[in-house]
Image (cartoon, one colour):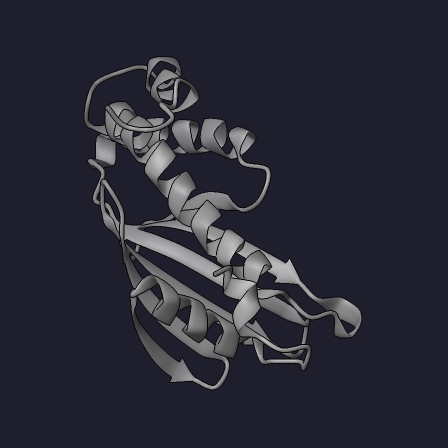
Length: 166
């Protein structure tokens, strides 16, 4: 059953939808407030912390997907260069590094201005794109910051993304 089939035609708060999606996928989650939820989602490379928050002020469902990372100080230029290359490949959302918290961040905001309502499938896709993007680019970040590879070589891993598993 598609995630959207669980909802009627009535308008449902976006964070309520996220909570149902988390339950549907058996993700660990915590409803922090009426307008915010945090989840832990296991990936192949990392466990990702995903937080979604609804801002009624700007009518935006904001998502942050993060994972811990402590790149060597001398490799920060390579990290920022690989992030620029990665963001050139991302059409929805983008990556940044929060140095103070030592977190790699993927951010996205779904603007729902004018009373628009997000569908469960839209929100589920938004979350899955964040996870897939983090999974896809994690090896390139590792190779550029710890593996001694050039950014161009590291990005070939992401560009040559394999579909499926052997």
